[in-house]
Image (cartoon, rainbow, N blue to C red; front, side):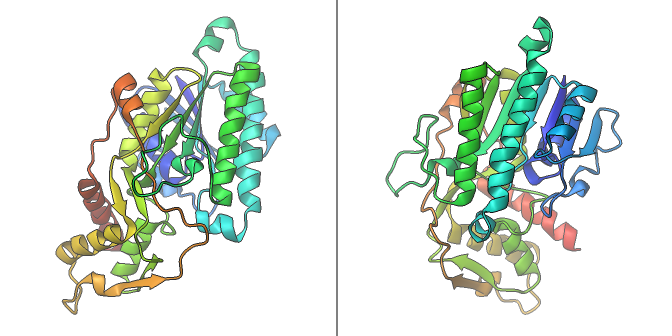
Amino acid sequence: MKILVTGGAGFIGSAVIRNIIKNTEDRIINIDKLTYASNLGSLKDITSSDKYMFKKVDICNEKDLVEIFGEYKPDAVMHLAAESHVDRSIDDPKEFIKTNIFGTFNLLEVSRHYWEALDKKLKSKFRFHHISTDEVFGDLQKDDKKFTEQTPYKPSSPYSASKASSDHLVRSWNRTYELPIIITNCSNNYGPYQHDEKLIPLMISNALNEKKLPVYGNGEQIRDWLYVEDHAEALYCVLKNGEIGQTYNIGGDNQVKNIEVVKEICSVLDTLKPRLNNKSYSDLISFVKDRPGHDIRYAMNISKIQEELNWKPKESFKTGLKKTIIWNIEQYS
């Protein structure tokens, strides 16, 4: 199978590509416009593979997309390219609207015209897998039931609204044009190679550099944490075995308060790399003004993917976090 991966130099996209190249015979065409959050270094272990090809392409450029489809003739698309940082979307939402909505529209249209021109056999094999987020559902109160695939959309930020819009576009291309799509919505990812604007790598980086550990509000916000390598395996499982037109929630089944995440990072670092002054890294925790519209709680019901596709996460939050911290320490050594 030839798989076109968009945003493959990003955090999750690179994990997907590493997993596929190392564990399958499938071929990858990686397209990425290489923004600030891209990191080709995350693919250094597989770039010499004859199963891998990279092209610098922006999904907002229709002409380039048409050329890529014409040259490489993919059997499937895994669409991960997106602007994804909530704070940035609050400060400047325009790029999120452009990439996440218009870029997805472009990719859908180019994919549709390509798919419609395929012969019957190839047409039946083609898949468009759209990777989204749990943030499209809004947030939950403390005692609310977890998000399911039927939870109504209620996005809170420009980022989540743009992703919700892209999800709706993808579903409508299936309903209107019968494009064979699958959607996955994932919880918060963490792991090696994550950009340090995100909570876990930011806390690790700041701690190792003896900087304050800024926690929004009271730190009581709850997230469901998913180790990125588990997510990569789940995405490939869905691509290969998921049912056309269906949505699958992917989560780590780890609901943890933000303040507890930060305290656990400090505790692990206290053991693995003690401070020179012998104080705990938790002394660096600092509470700052909360983010506007900050969601209270996310929690994913992953029973559908467990029961229908026999997937479940391998890493607990503690094991995944320790691996992530060890990897980050090695980068600083």
